[in-house]
Length: 288
Image 1: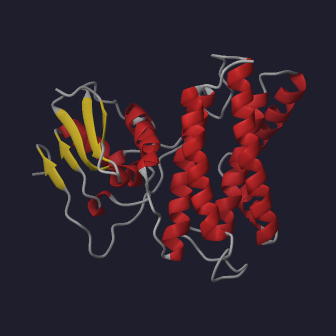
Image 2: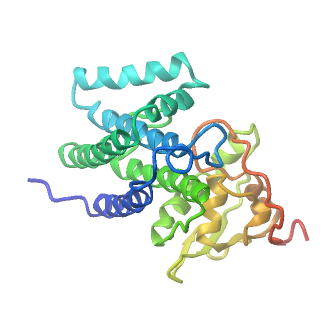
Image 3: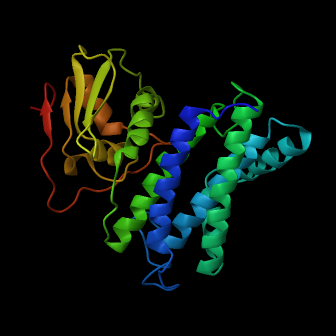
């Protein structure tokens, strides 16, 4: 029997902890406009739609992980892709609305089952076909990459829920997974807007909730981004306006990046409007 992949197991453990925290926050909500049907900061999405979207994507990811096994599994994945091709601008909203149209208890049970099935599918792929990647809507992904991506999306949509409910998101150091994707997608943030990505390296230095430091990029890079990890994660998932975050950009390339940072696939989002009483960001070398 193949030994468990320690990196994958670490990501899945962090993902399980994150999803359980969100589960705890919604499980006792009333199935009405004060709870599951309450609007979130994402236009047109209530709490139920947020959870339904997470469940739908978990199903898609588990199906993709199994698609490398044979024709039957691949056909199931191809069917999901065809839904997206037939309605590329609307399938995400439609699937979220359809998934949220069931009683809250049924949706919660479905989401729990989807989470467990995804973890099993990723473990199976890593054990049975080490090094093989699974198809996705963008580039093929390894089980670790998919687990990290699921963490990022769950963190972002969970933040929509806690913001809507006015409760503490209780961030932990697992936010580093969001920061990792946010740093790795710097070039994509430019490319998706038709811009040429700067080639100068950027050093990212962020403070995790525990007080530990997370870094990416060469220490001696002239272009730098620094600040709280949660703020950086909010920025790259477009859950807050840059002006409301305590992030420091040093150098013009780093400054341009923070204006357009995007950790998620797809076209550029509209982002969030600044709060009425924003914090003033610190910027060196570009906006000063």
